[in-house]
Length: 345
Ligand SMILES: [Zn+2]
Ligand SMILES: [Zn+2]
Ligand SMILES: [Zn+2]
Ligand SMILES: [Zn+2]
Image (cartoon, rainbow, N blue to C red; front, side, top):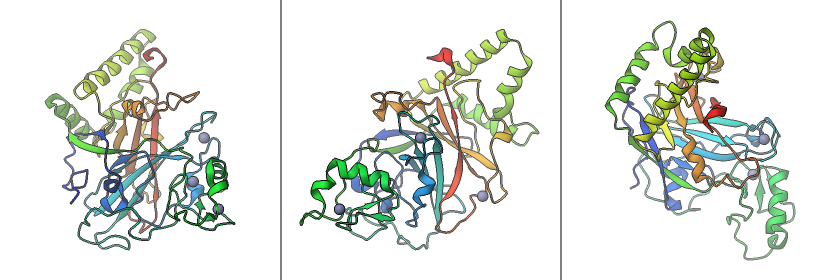
């Protein structure tokens, strides 16, 4: 039996779990295995998929690509997954990211209450998926009717990449996946506790300060920026980046840091969100920090060949503190992108 990548135990808020990429057999990355993973197609948790419209980039209106997902059950959600999509269009003027949350009870519409043995791909009928990106596929090829797509864009990509020849050809398996490879390379995300005593203390401080009027981790750097002169700003910037590098050095290959209710590790003093930058969940509850994607992940995505490559300092994901229940629907959560400041390049 494949153990879920993330501990099922209630989360210790003072500790950080780090994620590393590892190659994995595709069977371990299927929805029924509740994986944490990078790239490839999404391992949808709820099989009532979000409408493809919700996966369009707000900058260029073209479909976003699946980046990664983290399986992170918690007290009120037996199964719970957070999925991130991003726009990988090199010419996009405002490359967007999107974060979704899906959660299900132990008794649900899609999975057995007991863990399932590793399944072979395609052994159970699932929702119709786009052949190109793995999103929900309301459109089908009008000639063969077995090739499904999220929309016109991926249908036309697939047509050019070989469906023109394969369309309607007998023997072409309906489930076979197509050739235009717009997806990121696929890996399993494996979690490990960060091993650092002073880090734990620092994080504990941060969790405690959340009850204070001003949350230290959110506003500290900004207040200082506003109050201090340029010279001071530069040393503050150095301090934040030095702290970032020091923490990363403990495990240089980490691609993600998970610490629900904790603090992100900022790469820069610039563009740190204030409390008001993080919108409440539509249910009315606050959103809290849950995990951050590190720049090291970019090394595994083969994006440097893109003309204007995908880039970030860190991506911080904030989720509903109550993890409110929307049945089989995917909720939208909040993602904040922080870049390295200019002098860090
Ligand atoms: Zn875009
Ligand atoms: Zn698609
Ligand atoms: Zn066709
Ligand atoms: Zn909520």
